[in-house]
Length: 176
Image: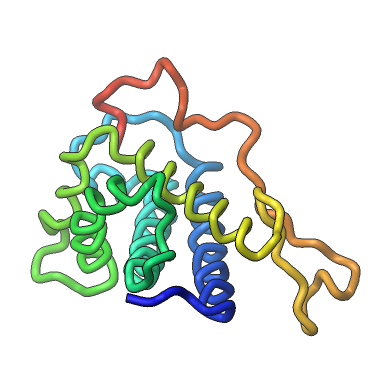
């Protein structure tokens, strides 16, 4: 394995940024519901955003694992635990399966409380990539020659005021 180049860190950041946009949409719409399988999520307004976010997050983790310095030490064991279930989940979402509700989607549910742990991985990766690039967290899209930020607009991606994922009243059955 090798260390990431500056360009690879920036590419990883932009991949995380895209995943973060899906996470933010999911977080805005998420409500505690009893979820026994990912099939239950399909009818929820947050479902498509959850699916897309976790699929994009896996693609990023897959890239980062190629490098010695890709995954922060503080979350390596958690990433290792979730890597295979997230890979199977991503495959079930982005590759059409023979059955509409593949068991690959539900494998991650066995790692309770999965959603809180995946959120932690997501935020730690974001903090790590922002810190490397010298950017603030929560992030703003850094300016490029063609970005809105260079024309006087900043594009904030911030956490919701109330993080519903950490609600103490949420039951174990409602966690993913």
